[in-house]
Image 1 (cartoon, one colour):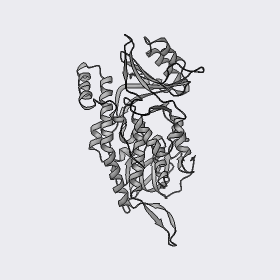
Image 2 (cartoon, one colour):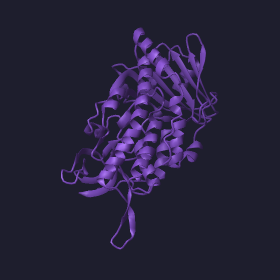
Image 3 (cartoon, helix red, strand yellow):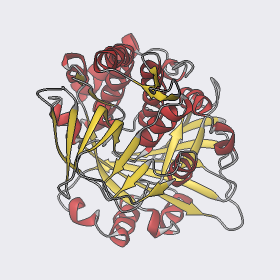
Image 4 (cartoon, helix red, strand yellow):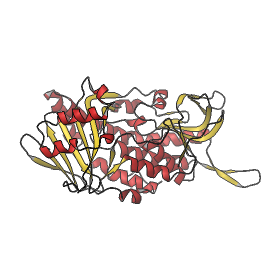
Length: 411
């Protein structure tokens, strides 16, 4: 559960997670399942879910099963059982594999965030606390975090789950994320009498604009639109009414029921974002550990939405990281011989984080690389570059569902 708790000056904690999004809360829950205490520092005044929904693929459900919350979340969303790609100009339809290799559902981000938070011990989430600086103590090598209110937090381990613009990633020397020339608009549309899209993932494409939609429930549909980013989008992104108006405008030439989908959308659910990513080659060249500081989720492997794997990969990170840390924990015994909990020494923590980085690096590299190639193919107007991307996909990623069969293993 979340609480706003004042941090005492010089307070020391064993494991500190920076960022209370999906990855941060999932990591805290994974550690909790292993009997390991952590705290989550979230700069917002309340736990919030950025974006509308998250598509969870089979590999993500394996991670959610390990976290012990999959059965509850399955009750909030329908299974997606097929995929169809439709070109608007000629009406041609092509099937793509969804639901054939395992469970796919589209979750409301608020459902996932709230479920993660509800399964954490009281006082785990500390709200309204922003990390402004982090360094390693020259004497003990412990990470020291400076917070915006002037308080100082000492930790044994720091895990940066602070998203695309991660301050912890900057400390580790990761290069800044880059942006595609494409933006994404996301939202929900509610059909009081029920929608008629069934259990299919539909993608409509016309010129350089694509619209995808998935059922969440019998009455709720999640949709996204990708189009070229323009100079007005920064201003538009700050006003949800303008987001709707610009998206309706972009839907010219699309079927009338798709235009109505946008017109009838829930204004409060709308988000417009530029698509940022961490270059795959940067992932190979980066050591994701400095002392006992590391990163996970988008802070490590920000990627475009083109494979719908960013969220599931973050859930995998949480399971693997908690498993690696738990394998190097020791039971703390007080002077009277009573067990006081699990502790980790700095050398053991560094070894555990190295093991985590080794296990995750190639997995997230190949996910990021495939996402980058697909995104570049959609992003560029150059026929030659499109052709090169297609060749890469044929040679390296002929099996289009291979990335969904990954298993992060047991906690």
